[in-house]
Length: 280
Ligand code: ADP
Image (cartoon, rainbow, N blue to C red; front, side, top):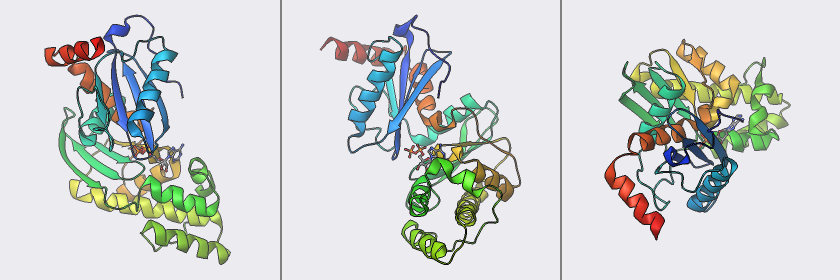
């Protein structure tokens, strides 16, 4: 993907947001008006992966490393050194979603290993949130495991499901769902119907998770799973409201982190620590 490119001019003004997620690491470099974004699969070494990705992204654009202060978010946010800020995922996803979709009042983020609902004030501040990070059911991990059992890569699941009548999936646990899927295949149920059933179960589960927050439109759908258009559509049906997937929705957390880094770029303690670190 090719987000709006930062020009080589003024690298000293650029800052960095990094989302060290369970499944992918995302880097965003932001200069106050434009950003570039890159992602790579997560590994056993989140900080090494993030540093390599930042170096590659910076080099692509002729920027020095690090271009400016760094804010990290996501599961691995505390694993990187020389980081000025480590804001939570809720703060970053909310901020990133408002940047990508100004005026949004609710964010649904489904990533590799968790799902969140965030209610926002008209000014874009977090009013309340719910999160499932205890179990992989209803997350990207659930989709990749069951997709693998069906021989369908995650980025093709929506194509298989489109137009198919969902077959009811009873298991919520990822491990049991995998067994159920295999058993359904052996009963001759079409893969499209099984996948549509898995999507329906994720949409139902997500809608019931966020129900207590009474989601208001416009609703932004972010995180890797937002790239699955069939889930976005089924979520709309469950919530009885339009669900919008903004451009670069998978980068919402990293964009939010970069925006926070930008807000803190002139605070002396961060400037000083960066200068000291870069002089070592
Ligand atoms: P995390 O931030 O936890 O690392 P992500 O937000 O990167 O997670 O989401 C990863 C999940 O998104 C994957 O497990 C996969 O199910 C889903 N995903 C990523 N890309 C796509 C795509 N192109 N189409 C459909 N699903 C996708």
